[in-house]
Image (cartoon, rainbow, N blue to C red; front, side, top):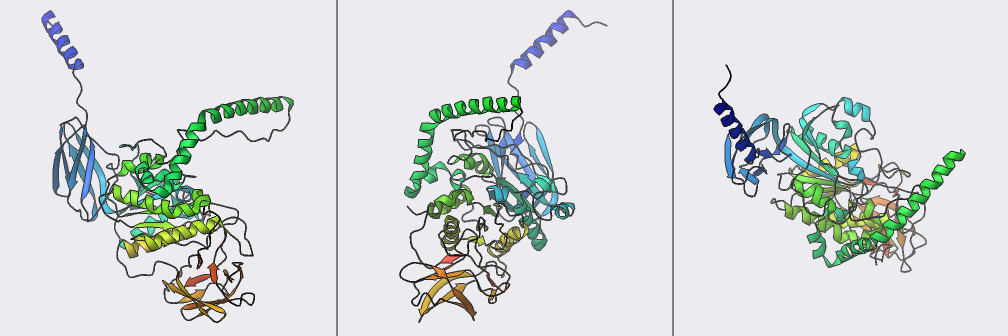
Length: 514
């Protein structure tokens, strides 16, 4: 039977009133808290997200219950240290309820840097076998979208995934091999957060506040300000050149002629992701303060031309990240640049050698850091060497020693001091790893100079835990260098199977020192 007219009007009024009222916002956890997540064990854990202002949000996990009210639409609760294990469910409830499935508790690491960290498993050596054998429900992968921003962001669009043939191919190869090694040795779940972007300098990964606080980094911000000042004119010239290029390319196609002139590239502008602080704002800040054990880092190629500045910039970036997380000086492990470019037989100056030195100095001066030396995995004509498993494994050795307290050797020999004995230089090292060895033959890669500062190739031999360096051309040695080249050829290792870092005993002004 038809409804009375009064009922129809009453229903319509109620519907219109409901539509006019603001809808309650659903409780929404940050994307780091999604199905398949790994949460850090053995330390306090912040869980956060968004909801209506003032809405009460309750989180339940591993027998704990924590409640907080949303303030300015953001809510955050704190859980006491969790026990490794899982999988388990986490429930987050307010006006609505969200249940996260298949959540593990274990060890969480950030992997970051430029293209050699972004380099995928698919494009690395042994990819087919690695991908086929990658199924492991105790390893989880999270990839941060590439983006830049002028101000720190709170949100990202991403989610955790189980490691396996369908997911690992597009993930960071160094990150994966690092996590695989740790998971096998520690036998706990491992979560890997890959936040990397090819071709980017360290200043893009550092907050503007930290850059501005370092007098030696003032040039970074000044140079960018000058770029922005000149951008309108640079953009105008680019658009004119592009229009001419298109016209000439079209004419060549019409006449059936080849056209090989390269397309003009746009100038650096205010939206360039490589600008100072842009990647920190968009790809690091949204992760704070997600509990983690530490970070691994592979970058430096884009800063090689300013290697001397990197001595200040790199430690400043590390401090920036550590200050952003309420965890103190968490382990920060990084990769020294691989050999690259033309192999030179005679000693020469090298910006890449100076960048490696800046990395070595960072390890020696900044607490709770370690460096993976990879002088054996470079490729002369490839800035992206494909052997990524040794890189991940060496970072994992450092993690096991620094983060987990294992009594293992995690570094190759590191130069400590030089003494002159007659016409010979006597070199001492830390991280002997059971003893020094010449890998694959006679010791190579050493150069020596006298007071004239003219370096020549030197003879070198291992005597006990020392290396003795000399040359008939240098009767009074003043300084020694090892592996000081774009493409180092040294073969000094320790018996633990790790190569020595390139080094120099002098402090002569380099090609990047201004």
